Image 1 (tube, rainbow, N blue to C red):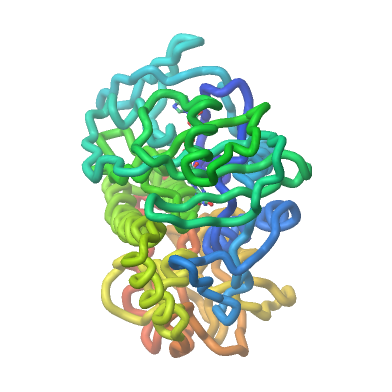
Image 2 (cartoon, helix red, strand yellow):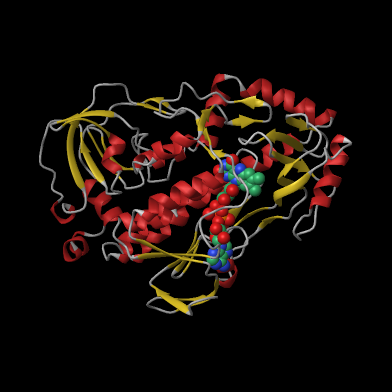
Length: 477
Ligand SMILES: Cc1cc2nc3c(=O)[nH]c(=O)nc-3n(C[C@H](O)[C@H](O)[C@H](O)COP(=O)(O)OP(=O)(O)OC[C@H]3O[C@@H](n4cnc5c(N)ncnc54)[C@H](O)[C@@H]3O)c2cc1C
């Protein structure tokens, strides 16, 4: 849905094929997302919709340690607790306001690609012809498999049951750890449904779990199943960890869980998917709209593969720390002692929150390749936040020096040139204070593509790299 929104904002004809009959998600699933994802939604002007339904909290954690990021230089120095079924409802309402077609109740069964496009086979309604196909179809992605994209990684060693049930006995609320892993019992908002997460003693099968499986797993941990009944949702997840060898095969790309799966410890899966979508959306739009060559799509893999690889490594460490026999508890204690110290706290929170992401755009000012901070600017039209300039997903050339003419004629119809002043400090998450630039070029995903730090060398190169060669830009403008 995030990718569909990005493409629609860039005026690309986009359709979503979803096998579910509607956007309603049975079961709560993920419990929220972290700071950078809130910022990304803020960049599109929709963060408030999510903030209004969720609860902000310090929820970036390592083992038992909360990594308080209250002092991070962001407008959102926290995580947001909000269930995935709420997130998907809000997202669906947002894309309903945009020109996005959705084929609900339709399953992609395969595809055939040629030089000009992709024929997407559907279980209902025959097929669809598209210039590009993006597999956002989850960890078991049919599209990834049909594209023969390898999915190397680690087989599962541990499984958890997750469920929403009623109980006859009052269960103890909260989290428990033992040698197998983590278990948690919590009452949901309606006051009677209990959300259960329990690690199974043995790795469970890939078949659908039953109430009996849940009951047995609870008895193994708590000596009682609390009289679980009336499940509205039971599911199983594992610590299987894999990442697609390539995110693109010709006209077929992967984003979200179809490109990477991992244990949910740390709560980063959904945020990684949103980050993929926002990185890919404007690039794909540039190519489809004829402004940029196809090679721009290669930067999607170059930028996003390392981000997921790092997050995946972190989830494996997190998952290991959840197993708490006495030896592991000793390790957890050592790690916890370190994690609250300033430097490790900032580094770990920077990673989990997604605020420390730096795409490799070469040497230069520390802002290059990093997220543009949401500064309070002063413009001729009055005060303005940087993120407000990104609502339409269009690039911004922000001039913070004396008002002057930049020679950007070939891109002038797409790149917004804004003269503004900013009085405050320049501070980046984890890095700290940096020198104030006199101008920056901000990509639609909010990452800085060029920084003027004294001389304006390199602006035309950056515009060409990211927004197309002057001839292409003029021809299609
Ligand atoms: C217990 C648990 C807790 C989690 N907690 C968090 C958390 O707190 N924070 C976080 O960020 N992440 C969390 N995650 C991870 C998060 O849920 C996933 O990373 C996220 O849902 C991935 O989104 P996605 O859109 O890539 O894939 P999915 O959510 O799997 O969506 C794929 C969609 O494609 C559809 N589909 C699949 N195949 C086809 C097909 N062939 N044709 C048509 N449609 C198809 C599906 O119906 C589905 O709607 C958690 C996961 C679990 C299991």
